[in-house]
Length: 93
Image 1 (cartoon, one colour):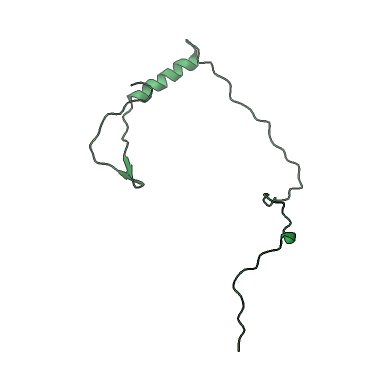
Image 2 (tube, rainbow, N blue to C red):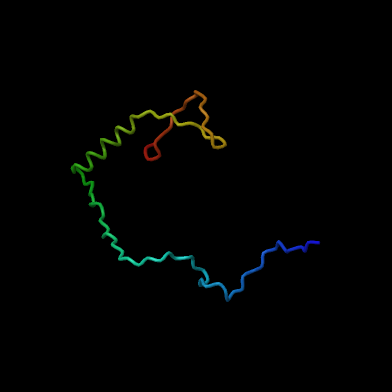
């Protein structure tokens, strides 16, 4: 004759929980952390006549001339029908 054992898990008493409420386990680290000082990119003014502005305008002109094939996405799958239409740039229409 066998005895039946309960398959319902028993809750752990609150006193047995050594983690403070709302915290996650933390891995121990005994070394010295050497985090490099953050370095920002240089601020560019894009002032009229500056090389940065000329480079930006040239890239925008090149991008405006590109023809892209943008598919429909239906149900997570790309659908290409061969029927095309013109799209406009949001900042220039």
